[in-house]
Amino acid sequence: MNDERKGVRQVLSLRGNRPTEEAIPIVREVPVTLYVNGRELITLVTTGDANRELALGFLLSEGFIRDKKDLKSVREDVQSGAVEVTVTGDLSEVHELWEKRTVTSGCGKGATFYSVLDSIQARPVGGGFSVTPAQIYHLMGELHSMSELYRETRGVHNSALADREQILMFRDDIGRHNAVDKIRGAAFLHDIALHDKMIVTTGRLSSEIVIKVAKMGLPILVSRSAPTTLAIDLAERVNLTTIGYVRGDRMTVYTGFDRVKL
Amino acid sequence: MNDERKGVRQVLSLRGNRPTEEAIPIVREVPVTLYVNGRELITLVTTGDANRELALGFLLSEGFIRDKKDLKSVREDVQSGAVEVTVTGDLSEVHELWEKRTVTSGCGKGATFYSVLDSIQARPVGGGFSVTPAQIYHLMGELHSMSELYRETRGVHNSALADREQILMFRDDIGRHNAVDKIRGAAFLHDIALHDKMIVTTGRLSSEIVIKVAKMGLPILVSRSAPTTLAIDLAERVNLTTIGYVRGDRMTVYTGFDRVKL
Image (tube, rainbow over all chains, first blue to last red):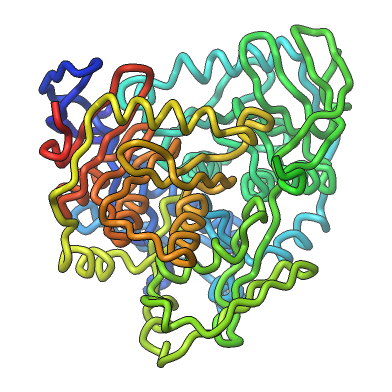
């Protein structure tokens, strides 16, 4: 694994009352500041290993970039932790929306909630893609087997882009939204189509992840963890299949049952 | 438990390939919009059961309220999910800081990072409070035994305010920051001193939780989960004891070893 993504810290490990002083690996957390056309947008804290992907994924999620032709340049200053992105076109409307963004989950990034809902409602996720339970169990097993940094530090969420058969791209981060944004950025850079793929993640199914994945145009979102009522209700509305609590040979389908072949 | 904090949804539960259609409890996620002196500040998504506490805790965390005498009124509109807080004094500087807030962890709320660091650095957490490992194991056990909504829905983080002997106040929320803000709001309303208490939480030890707890003036932060490098380095700087990965009779002390009596 990439050693830049962890640091070593001296800790006191206790078993009962017995202390052992030891050096253990800890996941890295670094601030990365994102500039768009010279304007400071946000500072994300991240594992810091894929800042260009993260920046592009974030800008796609928030509507600053829609298409590859919008992108002029991406420059990463490794020393200062800054990523400077230059895009074409008039961003004044997107910036206005950005300034007004008002939602945070206490565990998530902001977004102008109801306008986002309107935009994804306007283009619900398409049909014609289905999976079997066996494929889902297999993909979750594959996600776990790839999560080296998690096993070492217990401090990251894992996410992957998968087709029916296998994981195509694995990303992890201290933030569950960041892990998905890294995938979105990488898929954008490599021109990977998303309409016949899935996101498989360890993160919970909150409204924000449902919105993010629906906006990516993905038909299925799979999680190791549980959903919220709002996440289920939104997924229903945009025809996104949500599958959660995938553990061993058990799983729960919350929405879009028709995409699961029994 | 309070039934308003969960909803029931019809799902497809699978074991292997065998489906069972059933109705299961799902944790509620609702948007709550916070107004300060008539101005819209933010919309938080939350379980929605303690909106006044959450609003006050959030405003304390972000510097809009410092003291009880700052607070004129708190009004909750249950229908619209709005909390309107009226405070005395000039907020223009705090609002300016708020507008410039730039950090999000991809899993957390924004805050003007470095200025926050400066403010907590100026008043490092005091000494004179210590715990034994047995007390920590006991408190984590107590936290788990109280987490009814988690057991039912698997969709919340649990946090508690505790003294050496027991949990004094238990709060849970879909957002780990919200759970701590609810505690801060409740402690503020009930005039509970914090300098000789701990936060015990299931949430990870990220930089933002360390900053939040250090700003509350608490000497010890205990988590079931793992820390990040930045969380450790900040805790070291402000003399906050951080204890993590508390499971059964094992735990790891990352910073402030002197507050753990062996």
